Length: 283
View 1 (cartoon, rainbow, N blue to C red):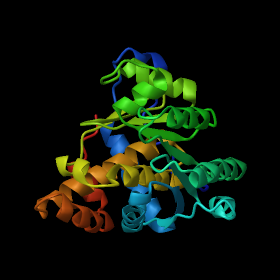
View 2 (tube, rainbow, N blue to C red):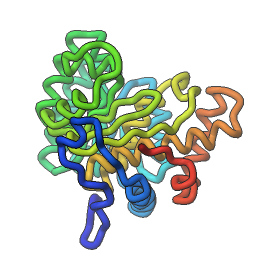
View 3 (cartoon, rainbow, N blue to C red):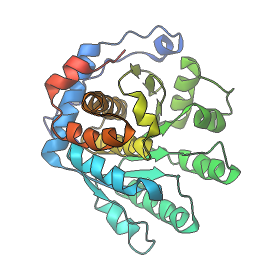
């Protein structure tokens, strides 16, 4: 359920690597937003299934975010059936939030199935900075080239052996190029790079950080976008823009994190191209 003959896939501006590494990237924001809107339209049309191996506390909210956006979730991590589920899915999310023995076994089987069936997958290396085991597992998964790695500053510093604090653009681009994956670094402004192109997405709301599973659901939404878009960089940008704009719309009718968690599902379900073009902050 990814690209089909005649599908538009080259929405993003092509930038050579030296431009990004020099910190002088110029982005055609209008072209990227057109691409984001098209990704959302195709997601709704095709209703791809995203298989999620994710944090125990994240499963319900992640499933609801996927459904609200137009995708279909599946969640089993049983070793006896996970390969079959992934093989028939359109994309895979691997989240290390609950890294018990059963999930560790399921992750290996799931990634094997994704690679054997040419399914795109997202790695969300939750808390790799807190546990040597997680860091080792994540490092092993990086070698298998996920389409997108979505992580925060401390997780990036751990995996990249980089200094603490916000990484330089050059460090992000070099890591992405070496890994062969798009890096989506979350923060006040989310940054996405494939080693050649760079985009910043400044949408969202401060209450998002106070809702369990918001980040996990965001990674799943990126996987849903990957299911319908071959350009992993554009898919990553689309996932962050869609969730961020939905959160801003939801905040208008919310009184705090609890009501935002519900309202964001409503906002996702009726988000349209007009909302994206009017509200998106892509730089």
